[in-house]
Amino acid sequence: MWNLSNIKKDTDFDNLVYNNTDFLKFFAAEGYPCYAFSIRGHGHSYKPGYWTLSFMTTLDMLVQDVILGVEYVHSKHKNDIPMRQGGGRPVIVAHSNGGSLTQRMLSEYQVKCTGLVLLAAIPTFGG
Image (cartoon, rainbow, N blue to C red; front, side):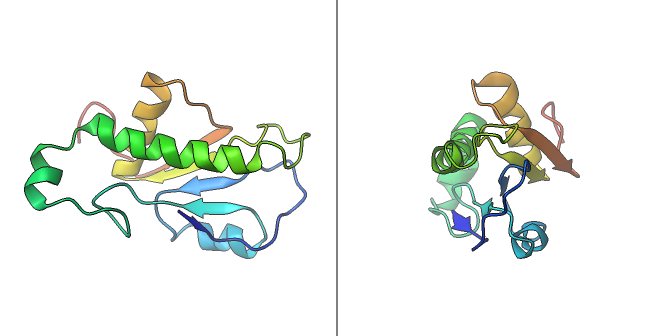
């Protein structure tokens, strides 16, 4: 998990979480709290072997990685600015498979967010 912003902007706009840093650099430069994380086997995360990742890692295991990232960000910001509409819950920006995992997380688990932005996301029912 990387915190891309050094400044906390006093705004009603909650923090952003994304599974890739490309789109968050703009918001971080504007001073919004931004976080990027990668799920197991991707980016700088734990890399299980090919067979383990391909055949023994379930979709729900990857969703759990997303949940941990979202809950981590919420725990850091739940007391920041009480007036924020989302109460420290992040706006999640997800792309491709991250969009599918995020949709599954929000529909199948008790996870909440302030908003969701999907960019060329894979639908939850297949690719």
